[in-house]
Image: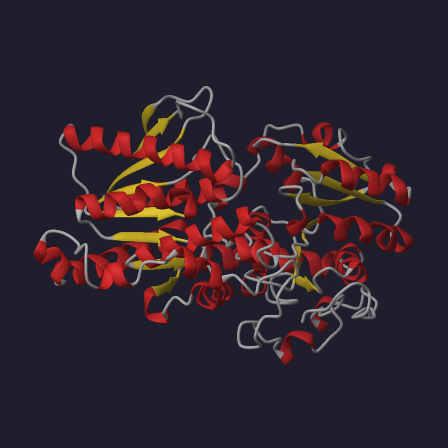
Length: 476
């Protein structure tokens, strides 16, 4: 198959997890024999066009007037994507299918779908509604409208977890038979540390030899829950004074988080590294005792998989896709979202029980290798492509050689009045979601306090810990 992939970011430009996802998926598909062309934004120092690990990457700078906001700037990028696509067509390329990632590629995806009369597959990695617990201003509503449009235009919508499927169904009313769940993946080999690296010297840049490292890596934004991690630091230090918290990443919350650390008087135990490259990230994983993913909102949680691949025991929030990856006390530990006491208890469970931590590392690595390899996920993606192409070739649209401008398409377009009525009840506060949207808490997940769950065969080197459902939030 010949696939045209549309993505706002692509390595070496990586803002979030989207760019890495597209690269790993594209490379795995190319390895299977498919021809993959990726249209993406430019990156300083990277070539405009290159073939890397079997994938044809086309980067383009955005020329012309600057956008008034991020959405307008993305629209300009989509115009550039269309220019490159047209050039490829003139050069003799053809494509069987278009695959767009998030609303950032909706304009180009929709135009190419109708212009080339080829099916569009969309992957929705997260939603504006979910990130902000509602839609509170015009920009958020506009982005959510574009997400709805992408889901509407796509032949199939791929999402990364059952949680995300429920969110997309609730927000955009996408029928279930249009949705497919394919998890994110991870390359275990990408998280290895060279044997010749001076691990001790590197580690001493961040912590003393006697200190145990608790590591967070991610964007410094509210949804990632770094504020909860900082609140948990005093509780950990109270029982385990030789703990050092390393926070890697950048983002708009950086200064507020540093101010909070100063206010709590824990500057000596918290180290902000700023942005780290892949090599430094791997070395930090290599010398860490615990990895923490304390997110408030996480459709999947690729960083948890990365920590598991790097052989570091993880503590995650019991929310979103994280609860589908991490099985409590089997391949990781889950804490109540937004609850600093619960998060501290789980961190302490590892620090006080080295045998338990080793057990978790082994189980987690086995899960990553068995369930989240990119070769497996690429095969599942290929199956979705084949399913779409089979349906498309049998459809009246393919036989007509175009999509009708009247009839059902015209009648189902979202009018300005429809947009207004769709969001009129959103308001400025987070809505209460219906119970069927919120994934239920399984009783078997909480048979023991969240700081425990240690198999008896590993010994009694962990104290039973109390739960703190009133310490800042609960799973519901």
